[in-house]
Image (cartoon, rainbow, N blue to C red; front, side, top):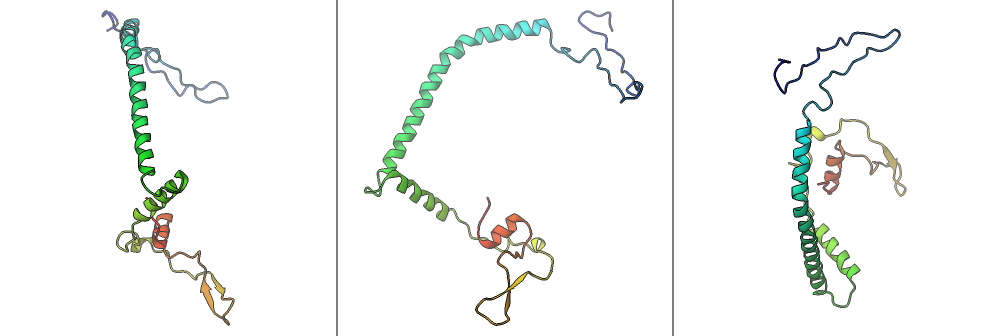
Length: 164
């Protein structure tokens, strides 16, 4: 196989159990590691392809930049027109704050027992940490930090918030 044109002889696999005196086993690299699939003809083809596409890229970059700037200007103008269409006496900070609260309130989903509070997420039975009520005599109630469910997702869903 070494006699054919364009082929290389592959070095035999070296024994990895050879140990130098007083050290770890040494693994020697074979002859086919670096540059085995890369030759000068491949490098020449890649450089020629780069030289041929470079003028096209140089011409396309300003067009891409202009297109991006026009798109950003269109988005900003739409946002400005929208923000100026309501609450005419207030500033943009108040309007953006109002829109964020609106998004939070309208995207809120009510947790259901079927999808958020599954039986397999119930915490094991144990005595709860309790505390005396300040205005009552000898009455102990569980602390607010005690959860019925395990895991952050189930615990937040049980409180009415969604992580997703």
